[in-house]
Image 1 (cartoon, rainbow, N blue to C red):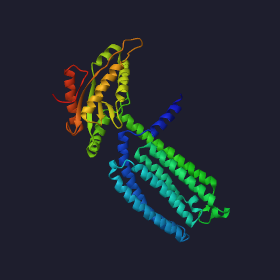
Image 2: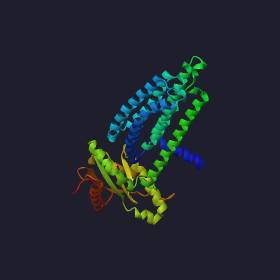
Image 3: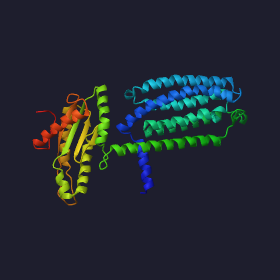
Image 4: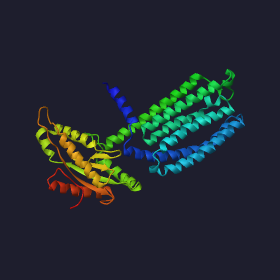
Length: 381
């Protein structure tokens, strides 16, 4: 498979996949920034109608002016509502899609209203139409490729339907000619849709680039798991969300037992294969939103949304699963049974920050090691 083909598949997969928690958290901050930009642009749009009237030396119609002023007053009111919702970003995960739908649909409705003033205005008005491009480009601040594709697809669909409907309503070619807006050209409308597509592709590429940069800085190169840097940056927000939602959360610190012997006996390449093999089993016990983090060569942290007793039971099942799936270091060689020891800590009873939780989990991990390894300790003795 060509490099170009691999890049395209990776681009599509990244854009369609749900971003990780760091990207979503950054996107929540981006939503607030978008809300502020929307409020600023909405305020500035109050100047568009009178400026357009002056620029046309009074040629603008009163109906068109009233439509423009009414629309700008409406979008300013809505902009303030979206801004208020964006300030409480954690409780409104649906907000980016709602505001993007609003941005695109409002542009379509304003173009439709312009038809009441001049039948050609919806086709050739640049000032209003360009807000489609602004709506698409602003999705880059949310760091979610799905949102960009959603915005671009909606803008192209709505504008195409609007153009098709208005063209079908025209009773004669003379209705598609205007002194103020010129002549309607089907080719020009196609060009506008293509420009929306180009803006969508460009914005999606920016989002993809941002996601890859975040992934490379917060991911383990061998396994693709989040790394220690990710844990330090993200864990305070995870704890804050758990406190706000009154949700049970357990932190598990796992260490592979006597793993150094694999590297010494078979080499580091085989050791890397063993790590990936183990990670494959660990991932199977994860539930939605839970994370497996590699913080060292053979050390892992699991962030589990469940009480500590339930977490202990799940990790005990993981021990059984790993026993059923031994690692084969080389073809024809004897399988190796790799085990782990673990320590658990519960939020907030065992600590209210990442340092105290890991410190408690590490203390219990050492107890598990001293008691013979291949076990998980959830309580202090």
